[in-house]
Length: 312
Image (cartoon, helix red, strand yellow):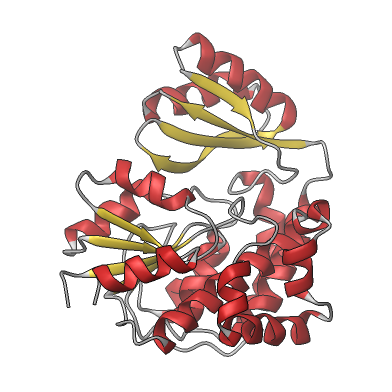
């Protein structure tokens, strides 16, 4: 085997119509995994991902099970094709649930129900139109934090995703986010743009969702991770199940510390990162988090074969 590698699992925004179509046509393990999730959900998840309607796929409570299932389908295909187990796993926001399934902490069936419920609670926590998120490009983290403080005026707005150096996402109440966009522009941001999402993830407005979610998290059967897992909230390897569950709840209203998570993996000797899920969003971020790290994705048959060859 080559040097140490980690699997990283993407979060919301990586979904697209007809994702994994080519791999699904070639490997029944892909469609079988979707069938397993569909049984739990009570609707045909593969049909939704392949045919839409797209606005339905983009509803938070549908998006989350779709990305999770696609990610685990690719994970199962990787193992079935003789791919080695990674030294570590991590996931971006929702992707942390995919990482937990891959690490053997929770079953796919339990995780699918959990993330569907998570999506519903997130949508209920802040009525449509009242919250917002924005991407801020080209500012130092400290400037973004200061801009949020200046723009808050008694409302919630905070930095919620530290995705790459100079790329931070903010979230909060719609008016405060709009003010923060203007403050960031005034501070010299290259771009500050509202994101097309209805739910302000990872900010204080999600605390009620976390409180309601706690019972669902504690109700399922948990196992200790069989692969070391780096969590979003701590940007550290967490093995203790009580800490893991507490951090999973805190993740709903706490920032995703992605840059630090990738740095943590690099410091553990990881030289290669495999993005296990639809899209290539993380691969673009990861290259900027740690210079010289190798990135791979599994989205298409060609990309899958290339990753297998590189890490054989």
